[in-house]
Amino acid sequence: MRKIFRNQIFNPLWRNMCSLGKLDKYGGLHIDLTTRAIEGSGISDKLLHLCRLRRSFPTAVWVYLNQDHFHLIPRLCEPSPHGPGLVFHHATGLSVTLFRWLAEGPCRVPEFATHQLGVAGSAVLRELYEETGILAEFSGILALRQQHAFPGSFGRSDFLVACRLRLPSACEELPPIRPCKTELSDGMWMPMTKLRSAQVHSVIKDLTSEQMACSENIHITTFTSEILRLLSPSKPASNALELRQHRFDSILGGRWYDLYLPR
Image (cartoon, rainbow, N blue to C red; front, side, top):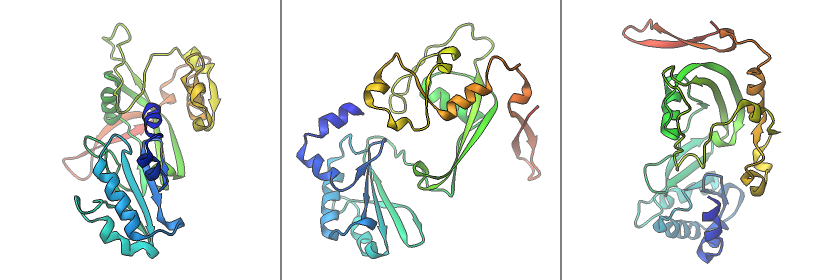
């Protein structure tokens, strides 16, 4: 990601595009028209040029409008090759959010929702395998994190589920980690003792690139630190530590549901 940034900052066209808005950590370009005055033809022409490039960056373009800019929607949503081809992501009250996926492959932008909920159960096993190539078994839920007005969830509430997984009993040694290149920059097995000695930060983005690149220093969030404290070796292992998955028949008939209980 940093390499792409370095290659692009010397491109005059790229600098012109970045002057329109801000880049997020996923490579998306965000253009907020609710806080600036701009000509409709000017923004649509620049977006049209940007969308025609279809390079590795930006991965997506986002445009935020309020009622003063609703007249721009037909032009911004005009299909390519004659228009930028933006589509609606969501609308709330008197504001609208448009976007277009520009990177290769299927669109990875999540659908809009009133709440975002992290995976658990079989879904987290699938995510682990897809991103690391590791097959594991679900043990239980350790904790839930709720965050209101979460930026990554379009300002909505976000729930993060911390799950405890275990390797299959037939696994005699640690399997190799094969990080998915589109999801992870790296992956490694790490002793719990090393994690417990890591530097704890409430905001990881405050770290410099040099600090993050240093393999000698391990940096974790407060959330990870609290989970480690929960798994302290000084505390005896107990099923009550986790919410275990139990499957029951649903009253809807022919269906089932998972109930997570501390037993």
